[in-house]
Length: 254
Image (cartoon, rainbow, N blue to C red):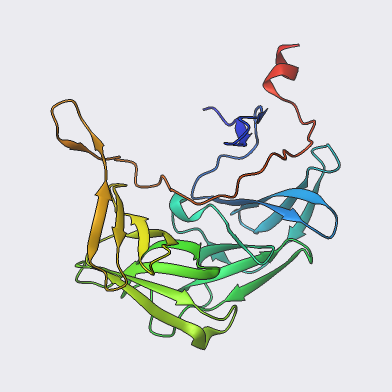
């Protein structure tokens, strides 16, 4: 199975291909990319779930595969590949995981500057048995989760208005679509996101559908992506690209 890892700048089209990566980016691994302003260094974070969880920090500034290992004894468990990608906020990467100790879903936060891990609680009544989780995102400069209760009729969007303050979780949108995952809040106060079939949808602040976009097949029927693990995301354009000298496809060919 191919285990190559690609880092790509969609603006400049520059890419780096790391051959034979020891990681398979699946639900068994958490990963994320960020920038440490204190050291002017780009970082790639990997958290594999083995018998003892460890955080592996890859520094791009050193131009090597050397990694810093941070051992964890806290028993967390990944809850699916769609939650494997870290959400970056306040120079911290966030993942939604399942805590075997507390038997509930929690958010773990890895500070890129302090190299430390902390835990962020979800709202009190959210339990794994009552709600199904669809996404952990950063929207409007805040952490947010989307979830649905047992009736599967709609999706609730909860936003943490004040960072790391559990009481600030607020139910901000109710979308009459099962499995809705937000991408961003629009200028008019609505919300843009995708449903379970990856159809883009725009809703107003009352949850009413305003617009939708899907690929159209030759016969005129809408086409949907069957892979629910794909995620749309916002990004900030940059001409910069990490200066890294790990083995690339060009190096390999030489």
